[in-house]
Length: 191
Image (cartoon, rainbow, N blue to C red):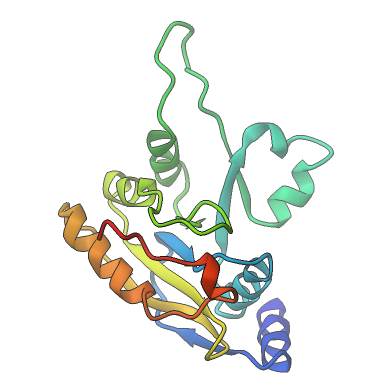
């Protein structure tokens, strides 16, 4: 029922849904770009809900406790803890901890904003690629195109291990997406 409410809300705002995610794909790293406005979160969440995608976001585990915990979980939050399991051990990397979530969760669509901020970034954070490769899951390309008023999942990439080639394919996809604020957007210029 919530998916129909989300879809009708998007339609009432003049947006349409573009859904290319295979229906049986319930384990992936999902990129959300471009990210130039707080409105992106609203359209992305409505679009994903309308498509029946239960996207999760990672957040420091301390936010999973009262009073924020119930709200954060309702918004799809998954707590991560980078403290060593045994005192004296090296602290695990963010990539290791996030990839391990795919071991802990049978179904997981991990939503990541690779730009990392709403400010213009000419180099995206590439941890998403390493997470997908380590967890052996695909990368789904979610987007919000403000010119076409379309929100959706446009493509699914299966990391080959050739990071240069795979990320160039991702940048080629996002190069044609119109953000809310074009002056704040750039694909990763290294690719």
